[in-house]
Length: 195
Image (cartoon, rainbow, N blue to C red; front, side, top):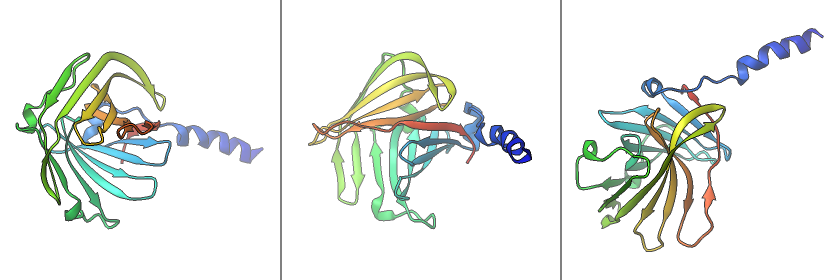
């Protein structure tokens, strides 16, 4: 009986996660996905959000996002936290990151983008389309949200879906579709404040 009582008392403390707010970007907003991957969003420089990610197989990476949405860079990271210089990919929209627009409900954004990786620069124009402002519940937390579809002008025609959370100032990858292949969804398991 005592064991059952202790288990019941301990369960709420373990199960509860505080829903994040924009202020939590200073220390980190952690997103966990059903496939075992995770991302932690933190404020970088002015107008920048840095993302530390981990794939289901343990591979690590980091992203830099303008306004928490526009991808500026991707880089693989070794287990000891050392970035892999050969894996760095940068995205240049032809304007300072601070001049990139915030996502807007029912808005559109297109840009020529220069992508630079180990193979050198290439052009990869991009088109973003945003849905209406809606209410969503993610991991037990309620947020205003805007769905976004981003089409990349690549030979295979890559497209991805993002969920912009204006109250937090971040976009979360929700699906991707390379060319005519089947769409791959990334269901979210939880979102909370903390590392």
